[in-house]
Amino acid sequence: MMLMPQPTGPYPKLDALTEAAQSRGHLPVGVVYPCEKGALEAALEAQEQGFIEPVLVGPAALIRTVAAEADMDLSGLQIVEAADPHTAARRAVELAAKGEIGALMKGSLHTDEMLSAIVGRESPLRTGRRTSHVFWFDCPAYRKPLMLTDAVVNIAPNLMEKVDIIRNAVDLAHGLGVSNPKVAILAAVETVNPSLPSTIDAAALCKMAERGQITGATLDGPLGFDNAVSLASANTKGIVSQVAGEPDILVVPNLDAGNCLYKSLVYLGGAACAGLVLGARIPVILTSRADSKQARIASCALAALTAEHLAYQPSAAS
Image (cartoon, rainbow, N blue to C red; front, side, top):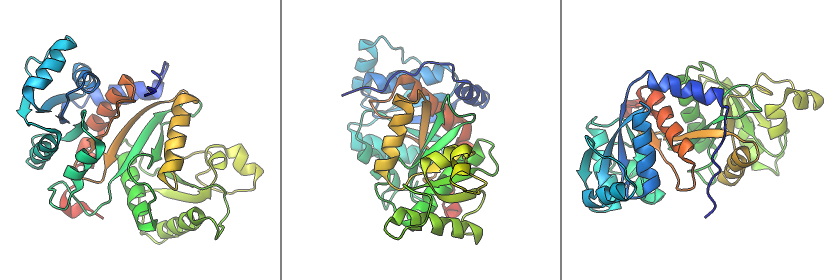
């Protein structure tokens, strides 16, 4: 498996994010089945940097073996016994429902095992929101932080699922102090074309925002990626927009587009990133073995900084 590159600095926007997170204190985070060096190492380093207080949920003997082999010190850390990944995910959800932890972090279990425990029909963390993933980027070529959704969870979201995807990203922006984020809804072209359903959805989402069905943000779309991030490109095409050249959030039409764009920003654009799954009662740090250690730690910082704002109650679901 090809590993994500280890980004190199400087990343002033990421530095500002982590400094702000350190000022919030340690967030109790349930690290689910951390039975692989990378997951355990990221959790411990995030603790050292002042972001989280890990609560390790999994088979204690195996976790201690992994730590010993990697020369990692688990002194003072709570380990909650759970024999297998399924049990670990279920137990972590129970701890979160009781308020004992403020976020969940994926260890070495499969993503579907993790998410099914969080959003399953009987889960106490379930809300009326659809869950979705948001990447937060420090892109050297862009003057401010940039968010991208959804490149991980929703494969081919319909219109109403895109509404929740946008609401989740807007909530994250609000938690980061962006009171009225600018949302660019991406498509292959910037004009409405019945042959491209993504353009129809984009137009409908903008009209929904005009009518108060999506609030707290300024939306525009459909926009091509070029005229979304470049005002010069938008001007060339005669696009008049409050969002073009200034987006805080990019909304992609489907997972294929989002995943390709995410990897392009990291591999070719030299971006550093963090990411969270939102829409449950608490945020979820959904890391991958392919993620750099920096990305895993930055995701912990993002959770620590925004968890209080993103801690939905069941009645808060839209």
